[in-house]
Image (cartoon, rainbow, N blue to C red; front, side):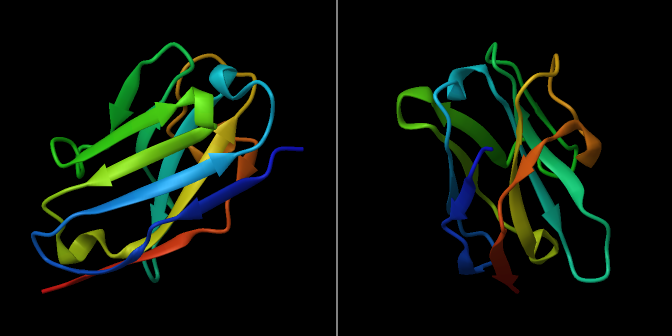
Length: 124
């Protein structure tokens, strides 16, 4: 069982920045593929960014160039730096862990463990 805990959400004005953190338990964190998803009110949960065990990263088109995913394997933590935030980025952001697949999945089914989510609200 892997415990996943997000932090760092909050309220920010449009154009501002936030950094989300996600701590995941386990002695093999460096072997995990990691993803950030988000879910806005009334919408499906969608992929935002991912980081593979090999260091590959990918992003949804809607966040590319504004969000950056990074990981610190020594601290069992993955980050999502969010810059130039827009009101449409308002959502609950979830961290997800995949323990044994190849590559970074962009669908929810590609992940085994999820955090409880952290709210990000961007005001206009």
